[in-house]
Image 1 (cartoon, helix red, strand yellow):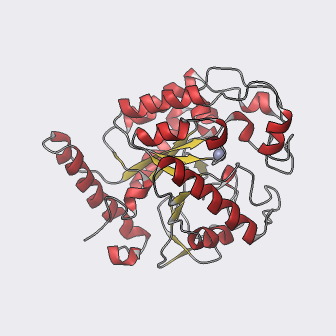
Image 2: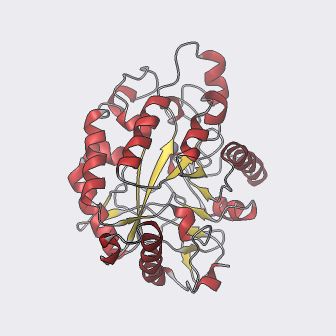
Length: 342
Ligand SMILES: [Zn+2]
């Protein structure tokens, strides 16, 4: 139980993360001057491992070109892999900044990209689950479930097992495909052995969840059963995304916003979120791909108008400017390996 680790609310998490961050730093950089510098909060760098056809306009939503990834592979006879090369580049960037990240992996990557998940795992990163095939679990418009609870649990457990078999790691983290998340999904995740989710985002531009998110900010919290609202204690944690509150709340955890808003606003939002507590930054390897993706799916040319070198520069800008903040993979905040213990 997390409660054993003296975490009795999301505000306390911040202090624990600081203490824990110091422990990690001491362990990893013993003798290094940088261990002496005090951090206010820690940051988790998260990477969503998915390819261009996983997005909802191409596969896995009510408005996609192909019903799901299976149908895509049945019908698509051209090149599909635009993921492997930028993933290798991301791994090099993470090494360059001495970062251990959390990779949220779509499980069907295991079928179509031999060796890629193994490579990410061998390079020391956490493997977490980003769904079986990136299909939305709730309707993007109505937020109603697109699957039964039993089906969601069976499919997600299968995805977890595939990722565990390939990586040799216990997979305890989940991010909802396209971040469309609901409280019932977290209950199922807990039931099938996950310990945390990182999908919820509070902002003034959109709400991809089926919940008003009244008591949620950018700091980790215990979600109440059947809900995404915070409660006092639970053996399951939500790591919500960052935002910049400038009167209205702008989503600044990264992803498409890093492509559309640029690095400066994202950086400011991450800084502000760090002042609140532990913070999430995320991006996709395909965000830095310099290749032209196949032009299918509604709105796709516009969606990918900004990517490649410019986004790689933005990622580097953020990482460089947050170089003095501890970077901790999400599993390490939960007592696995380097647990939060007193
Ligand atoms: Zn995704």
